[in-house]
Amino acid sequence: MAAEEGVVRFRDMISPVLSRFPMVERPAFHVHFKRKLAWTIGILLLYFALCNIPLFGLGPGSMDMFGRWRALFAGKRFSLTALGIMPIVDASIVLQLLVGAKIIDLDLTTEEDRAFYQNLQKLLVVVFAAFISMSYVIGFYRPDPNVAKALGVSLNTISLLLFLQIFACGILIYFMDEVVSKWGIGSGVSLFILAGVSQAIVTGLINPEPEAEFGGKPWAIGVIPRLIQIFFMPEKIGLISGEFFSVRFLFESGIIALMTTIAVFFIIVYLESTRIEIPLAHSLARGARGRFPIKLLYASVLPVILVRALQMSIQAFGKFIAPRISTVASSESVSEGIKTVTYTYTSFLGTYEHTIQTNLTTNTVITNTLMPQSGFMYILQPVYSPYDWLPALMHIPHEGWEIALRIFADIFFMVFLGVVFALFWINTTGMGAKDVAEQIHRSGLQIPGFRRTPATLERMLESYIPKITVMGAAILGALCVFANMLGTVGNATGTGLLLAVSIAYSLYQQIASEQMMEMYPFLRRFFGEK
Image 1 (tube, one colour):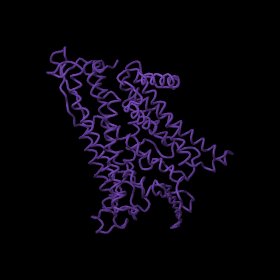
Image 2: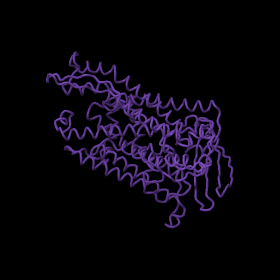
Image 3: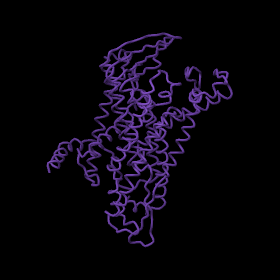
Image 4: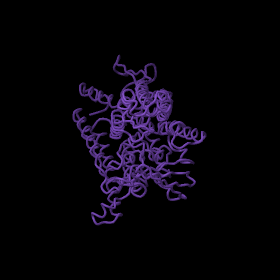
């Protein structure tokens, strides 16, 4: 009773705040497929436009918090979409943990509790958008002194402008997600991830621009132009015959990355199509039969996003706090017109290296990176590419036990926490055995040979859904890590590639379903749509 009173008091306190938030209303009528498609394309074009608008007042010494996971979180660095979907993902993580641990006791099968859950998520999105925007401005983004001088304002004012731009666009992305979810096809989060990863893959395939001194050779960025260089102009990039079969050549040429990308594509399509089908029959319409499919990837790929977001939050915290609590050593060198300054931060978190490379001719910053190189945060850092674990490719050598421990930690995060988040996800989104059993019962269907009761359906589904959810999440987590270890085209990461393929497959199915419902309107009534 005390717990229930606590929940009521919490709702009474928070409800007036939640009621003031703007929201995208669900359509009170059936939205035709063409209109849904128009909304989806329109939001996608707006997203790409925002990606190409740089932040006003951003200085040259700024760093990107997401680094190599940028495409995964659906945003472009140093643009208005700097936050991407991170506030939405963080809000989902916190709410799932609170609801799953019964700290907030909600019955998400009821309309009232589900509405409260969604409103609470909206509040958390605002909180996280403000917090991450502030973290950017304080720890990663630098105001441009030239802009401050031109406007006659202080650097703090430019920092405030940066904060307002990042925060406002972060909230706009949330509402864009709502528009797609309620008026379009699929979800905005999935659409933005697909757009970002697809752009990275296309660029990694066809970009002919040279990558400066990559592996000591002037390779093209795109895999296809790089392969053309190898077969038709080997002397131009300094290749010798003995290198063609070396481990370094296979990875640096992009051959392994291309093979990995193709393999992951087909594996995900196969996993998406793998399912168990439970036979169903209508209790009144004799002869009317169907099947309820339980896919191997039952929880979809969203738990993978949640795990990666948690890992990135840990790494962002380390990058933010390390320079403030560490002892510092520095070194400086100049080579071929490029000045390299390295700051080494040492603390209980481990050793971080902050490298700034500046072109002395143009006085522009080429690279500005802050990465853990040893210690606790290094071990917790995800494996991004083969350059993180293959001794022949590593720029900074590490002990074998450090590499092994880092790989083990990444697999543990992706597999174990992926399973935990997947179970939370199905239980908080109406995909659990109890919720599905009630939906089947309300539709008038039953399992042939069993009594037509929700409890019977629940027992049957309980023997399948949790086990398949655990198996699918574990397979996805392991596949993400191994794809990262081998590398992917365009540095889209194994996680990004996996998400893009799965989202594209799901989007194709949703489009086919929408078209089917347009052709046969009675199907909308069967699935509960007006």
